[in-house]
Length: 167
Ligand code: HEM
Image 1 (cartoon, rainbow, N blue to C red):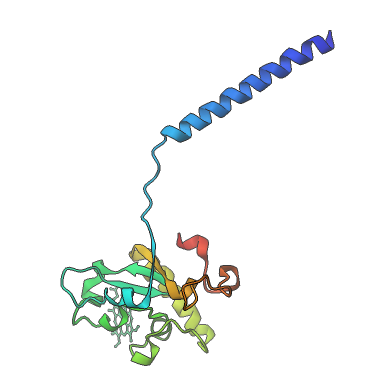
Image 2: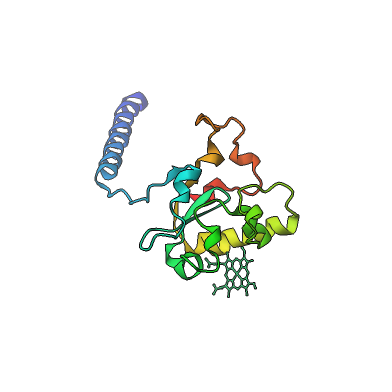
């Protein structure tokens, strides 16, 4: 009696599980896929085109290797604006040091103080991530000079880089 009950019960469970799976598959198939803005890699040369010099063209800045579209901040970054020197490149060091000195307009964070790194993260989070869309990443951050994947690039080893926050 017990065995006679167990078999049909198992069949019912399997049928239920099977139909549930089908429903989930169908839901997945017909669910509209949320539109995600595609992001791309920028070489230094490509990024340099978005330096705000050409009227009507997008303006990009990279901070910590993340490329932001700062066109809506034209009053800061456009041609002749006070922070125009920061755009069309990775200006991480300048942002960290609050410096517009050309030697600081680089991705290089070597030798920055704890305070400067903290200030960098604050501006990164509270200005750039909060105000501007991400359009890509600098190739230099992820690839070696010959274009092959940079074996030393390990997001988890970089204290000032949180990949899950950025996508
Ligand atoms: C006399 C010196 C400076 C003054 C008076 C000044 C003033 C300001 C003001 C009023 C804002 C706008 C705040 C807002 O309404 O959102 C601002 C934003 C900003 N400043 Fe300065 N600033 C100075 C120097 C610098 C320097 C040397 C840097 C170098 C990196 C810098 C980087 C920035 C950045 C990145 C923003 C954010 C722009 C944005 O919202 O996209 N500032 N500054």
